[in-house]
Length: 83
Image 1 (cartoon, rainbow, N blue to C red):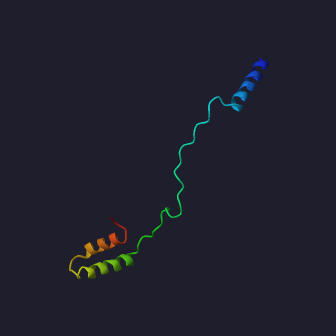
Image 2: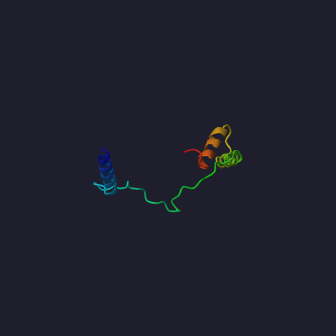
Image 3: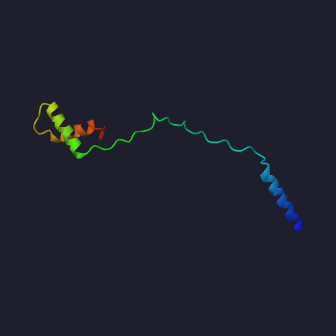
């Protein structure tokens, strides 16, 4: 029986040394990004920056009364917080 196990071990080594089928092809990868295409981190505007822009919107619109929230939302949209 000892002889059979050594034969089995040799055939196992031989099988692993020479693969019978070709290696699987590598999955396609995305093209590397250039430095120009990398996303740029943009910090969120502060409360003061939004308030300043809302004031500018209010002035630009002719200083209408009762449009505070609309001006604030417009300021956020202009600063990139909303779409």
